[in-house]
Length: 322
Ligand code: TXA
Ligand code: MG
Image (tube, rainbow, N blue to C red):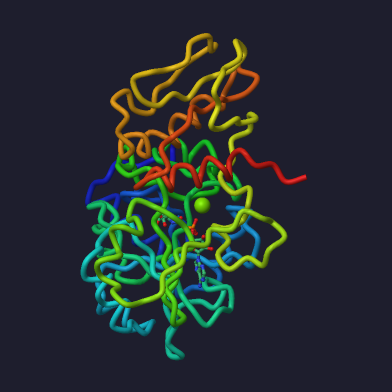
């Protein structure tokens, strides 16, 4: 694993040189590992799409270290600033109007008049972003349509040597991608649920319309490709909300009362803690996907708080397009 590097000053400076030369650097955030490239370099952004095998219409998130830097590229209105000041740095992405004068590659926003922006909280992500001194696009560092990485070696398993450098920051502590909130129209629209929930943002958006529309049908027009039906997917068939388990299956359990009879059982949280379950979800799916099971069964997860985001990812993972 030549391309996994520990986070020393020397390695972070090497990461800066790579980014400046248009290469790709994967780095940890508090949500998942991102596949980073210079957001202002069309060629580097194109390389991100190529390495991920991602459909071109799927726009990317630009990562920053300050609200002031974001305002060079995007208009933040009152509600955006309220949410920004409350939840950044953190696991929240805002879709806002892009400035005409922004130097961010049009490819990054897939030609849309809007742009996705986020300030991550992870200390290594911040150190990396401060050192490169430019916005960094970073989709999750996995092949398009597969599981998001929560460890450096997941990135390597999915993308191999096509990434020039993977900065190792250990396990991502949230383990699910950021909440995506579209503020580009009069209404507030949650396009992707995450660790920051509707209940968390409610107090800051008084008197405003809010809707929650992650889409599950592949036939509907896609506003955020996080809405693609089958997006987070293991190779083995996945059964969710199960009330029984087969002897040839791996069981993903939740809480103290678990089903018996599975070939292998892994508990997301023995105490029934949803935050702990979210942090474990992708690494458990990664490890079970190697087999030797016929399928993976998942016990019901309460649909509240970050449980909504867990169920959103599980539904996508279980769905197979015909
Ligand atoms: O936690 C995260 O958000 C991670 C870490 C690395 O920051 N990144 C991530 O990026 O999940 P990505 O590219 O896999 O997901 C970005 C989401 C997608 O659902 C994309 O469609 C949506 O944001 N998005 C980006 N720009 C958009 C725009 N202008 N309008 C609507 N949706 C947009
Ligand atoms: Mg992704």
